[in-house]
Length: 115
Image 1 (tube, rainbow, N blue to C red):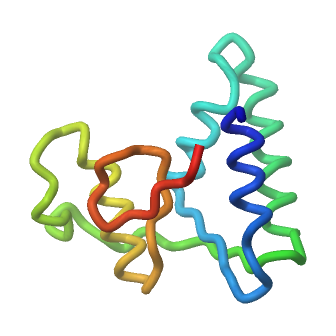
Image 2: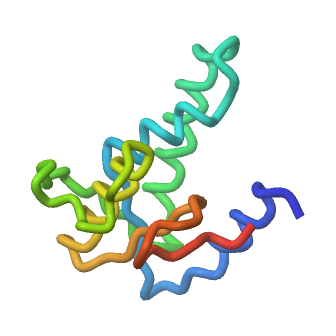
């Protein structure tokens, strides 16, 4: 199963009571991995359309989280530079009473999206 189908299956498992949230960092990361850099112009437009469709979905509640966490809020489990972004996103989700969902293994306390 490819990530696309696994990720779609995961999103489709949400109920009407679930909500889905993004923030600037997660949206920018989405744009960054959407298409290789040689397709950057169409990747931005495609990313914007996909995000707009997600926000307009009546199937799940969508939220945009304002990033109000500073570096002092990083979890103590963050020990290495490669952990900083996930640690920040974890702290942001926790501050808003949410759970971080990630593809990255090793983010303590986060939900690992099935592949």
